[in-house]
Image 1 (cartoon, one colour):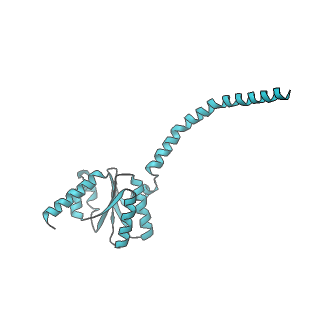
Image 2 (cartoon, one colour):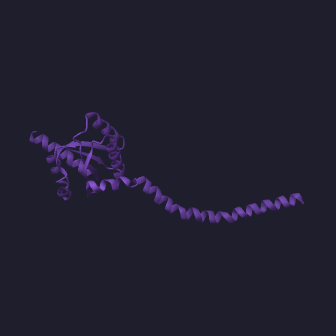
Image 3 (cartoon, helix red, strand yellow):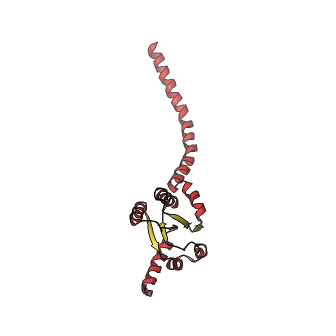
Length: 173
């Protein structure tokens, strides 16, 4: 590969590593072309991307603080799944693909700028997604307010029932 092509690829990878806060690295050695295409389509639907990289070029592109942690990970054939969105959704998609096809071997990754080893990947998969957490926080914040509203509405409802009973009593008398 010529120097100018290498420099272009390094710049391209640098851009991907800089713009995407989360990426997982895995060994794709036993993956067929059809499986790789299916994985790419699945990840693209979620707003993620898959890139097969040359290890030496990828090591030059990784942000400096993470280069030391990722150096042992960049060995053997390496593919990188990138996302700028929810890290848990990408992890779940990779885990699902791994369970169906048994060809991915996760090597490690970076989640929101922090190195994560392969042993912690299952912990990430078990986490709820970002939108689920936002919904839970919203529900927790709304619960006291809705309880307060019910407390305020109860006397008004009781007065309405009382007036209706008085009206029925006067009509019957």
